[in-house]
Length: 360
Ligand SMILES: *[C@@H]1O[C@H](CO)[C@@H](O)[C@H](O)[C@H]1NC(C)=O
Ligand SMILES: *[C@@H]1O[C@H](CO)[C@@H](O)[C@H](O)[C@H]1NC(C)=O
Image (cartoon, rainbow, N blue to C red; front, side, top):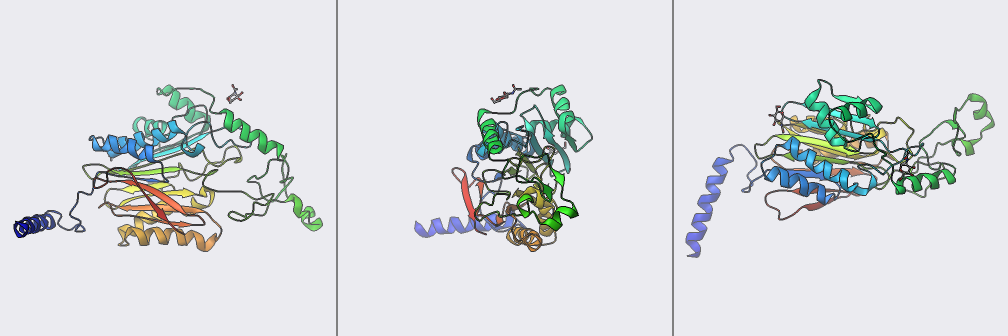
């Protein structure tokens, strides 16, 4: 009995190894698959329900990121979080179809809370890639999204009031006079360098240590993004992101969230990538483009992720960030710098979302 079971099992294995020709020899179904930055469990479950039901990868990404916007994941996605210097919340989001390389994105969008849906409208109903600011809001509303509405919440306003009371510390200004107060700010001239009023110049960038009066505190709770990748049942890949950006940012700031190749990138022929962290720095390196192109030229996901992070760390040893890489066969890996990173995965072989922890 036992040996005939074994025989059946080995025939099945043999059959598998022939049917998955050319792929890594896992004898399990590899997709659909959902991968997301951070333990945003409900967002991953929402995307999984959609893609397991037969939705396209693009639609599943929209469902997943929307869930995060509605739940205001960590307060850094959706409305009611991350007030800027004026106390306002704005929305950045991106959606990419890895089959066609179509992208839709919105940045610094005001008065409309549905970031990923707005990104989809840009993708579906324009030939553009990125709309910004109030014009992104007007477009989204004209195409059917709710608004204009107040994106502040009692929490975001309370946070902002406390920040004002604390002389607007920390902030993202540098080389300005009055960086240690609420401004108005002026460029730091040579004259003031001579008198050396360092108390008034925001140059400290102490990310993980004791908060300095003038330092930017980037951490998981004031600066975060959902970046999600989905492979659907047909093997098509899509990625999306949504965030309300960095807390106490200079109004008008756009981070990596809506920048294709930075916060996310996908190509059906290769795989996908999602990123999170200090977007102001990461967007200078297009880490997700780097990851996907490295995998295209033969690196496995882990090496590609490590390589993208180390390129940034060489220039910015204090940056905080992470990427998660995913090849088209569903093999995934993360890399991070300056913090411990977690990402979530739901695959056919799991009963529920599983969270993976990556150490710097
Ligand atoms: C990408 O766009 C194509 C063409 O519109 C569509 O057929 C496909 O379903 C989209 N891809 C995904 C992953 O949804
Ligand atoms: C927006 O909402 C916040 C928080 O509920 C509130 O404090 C603020 O007054 C509102 N702004 C406007 C213009 O209604």
